[in-house]
Image (cartoon, rainbow, N blue to C red; front, side):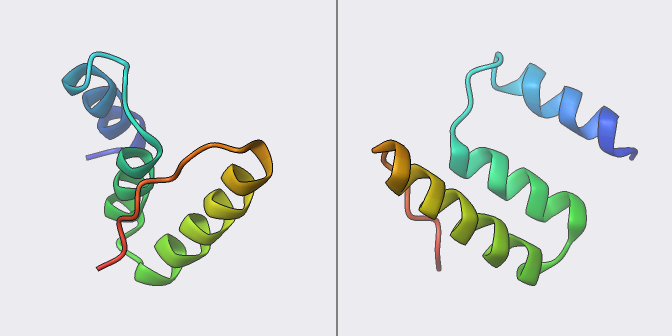
Length: 60
């Protein structure tokens, strides 16, 4: 499945309202890389800390 198709499916399944954790999990599933997931999660956590938003902890 192509990335664009997968993203459309994710959007459709969640009616367009999905959380950061869903997005990160989706990206991790598409890339299949735990390293990418760790980097993205860390980056989003830092960004969220700066903006004052809460990030759902999806770490195992």
